[in-house]
Length: 174
Image (cartoon, rainbow, N blue to C red; front, side, top):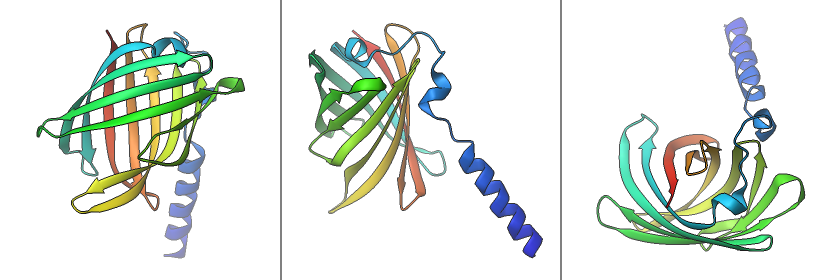
């Protein structure tokens, strides 16, 4: 039994070391320039899947994006398949070395991001309302530029390190 537990612990340690980093995508093209891509109008279509992979929510996001120097505003209007709507306004700041920070009304603290090659990793804590409660959940958000108009986004949502589900989005510049 002790050998089995050691083997499991070793496998988990190796798996943790194998997580991708933005630097893994440094040579990938086309290069993602957030200021250029998130400028103007963008439409996104997405799904939220629970831990089992079941789609539990579908949505569309209409985004109006603009930058002034190194500061950007992403105004997101969400419409869900059940007819509910929501809005999030991100305020982004570009920093040296491909780094970005961001804030929004439902984000706890400051989001941290790193762009490299065609990829962007974004990590933040979101206040998520569920029924009559609000939960703080962590997002590990990855975006991949496919071409000048299309970007794919995959975000893992977790709480206390436990994976709760995933958000998958397809962005299209209008």
